[in-house]
Amino acid sequence: MNLSGHTKPFAVLGHPIGHTLSPVMHNASMRELGFDGIYLALDVHPDRLMEVLPAIALMGFAGVNLTVPHKEIAFHGLEKLDESARLFGAANTIEFNEDGMVGHNTDGYGFLKALEEAFGKTVEGDSVFVLGCGGAGRATALQAASQGVKHLVLADIDAERVQKLNDEIIGLTPQVEVVQALEKPEQIELCRAVDLVVQASPVGMKKDDSSLLPPEAFRAGQRVFDLIYMYPETAFLATAREAGAEIANGLGMLLHQGARAFEIWTGEEPSVPAMRKALESAVYGK
Image (cartoon, rainbow, N blue to C red; front, side, top):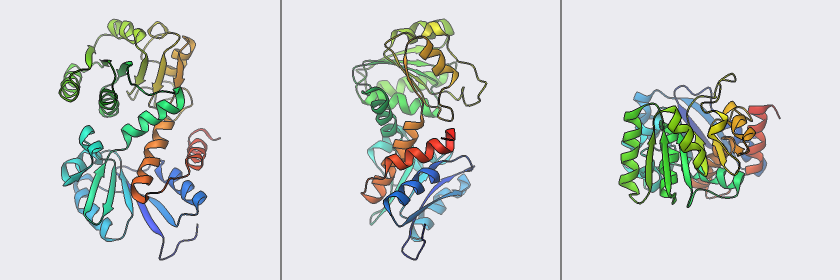
């Protein structure tokens, strides 16, 4: 990588930030393209975010990503928001242009693109079961609802969280039938009946975590997607696969949300193969 006075800087901001893989995939893509840029990871305290963003723009950064806990802070602090950010109530990508800063959210795009890549279709007309209705689960449920699912099951042990998301979805897409599943027996029954299962809880991030649902919750013909990406196959996915379901982990979502961000910043397509190879090497040692 040859840095010069013409090199365009990009960054991801978070607190903490050591876990991020965004520099790995973006720098690999820029090297492959011969794009004169560099992507950095910067630790920014949440209390300083809305001071730092204008300063970064003035310094000539070409764009930034935001990770936890900055997505919601930016959403409330930015004057201009793309429709994607308004849908999720969060911004993970900031575009700097002549009119100022614009917040976008590429997580939903990444989710849909990963589903299409893994299974050959997204969610339109499907019944979908979302396990875990926190930040990631909320985003995928809202994206699914906006893309024409016919039936959505919200599964979590936190009744207040589920009810809040239920109300959001009904307000956004009243035509979608929403069902709540708080107890394990009903979760098993409702999960088995759907077309697509999305595992959006943090359970599975530790290698010895067991599956939140037993084999009888799955069946042949289902598609099962786990947002966790640090292992090729979580216990949840292994359980679903053994029951006959098609499976995919969350690496594709990470990949495609990042690729979309690069397109927003530059108007150019990144090297998705180079990004994928770099991620698989970093995560799986391939």
